[in-house]
Length: 238
Image (cartoon, helix red, strand yellow):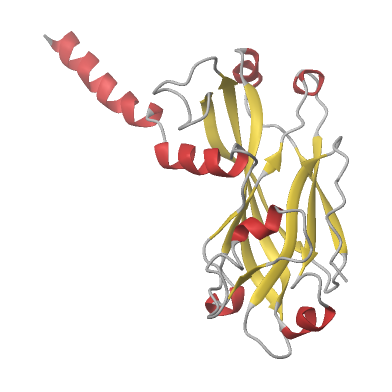
């Protein structure tokens, strides 16, 4: 009888630890795996009378165009959260080596495509970046064990890989910041048909104040692995 009680107690103790984080799965699916392409999300976005509701939506951060921007009026943008897709370039040779990865944070700061509006609106000065790591397996069929609406199973994570602060220049042109990444997932997790991925959370800490408006804007934002050729966004129309 004692053994049965012991086993039941062990199961009760282990189950919460291994429970799936379905809310994270949904968020991860929308950001990194979005169809037809990955999608950025923000904790808020500006809705301006007379314009479409999604005119300043976070989708503008990854639409490849400098003529659209994500903007928010909440607390001058300070404390707002952004989730930006990571374009995974981890290769098998990298996984089994001891080499660290370099990821590139690329941003076009401020209101895009208009120098006057760039100056009138707030721009990002300092931002906190939390990098989460996970291990996943692609599946053949979608079932209840898969990330919602996508054939991928999260085997381990997310676990916090690193946390750092980034500071951007107050310029309208693109700027890149390289961030070194060390995979801290146990190697045996990566040998059981699982691959590493990163999930990125940005929190705005400080701004360059605009001359006229209290809205914070960013035209474009992306995160790439070191071996990817960064695309050239569409230029503003003249």
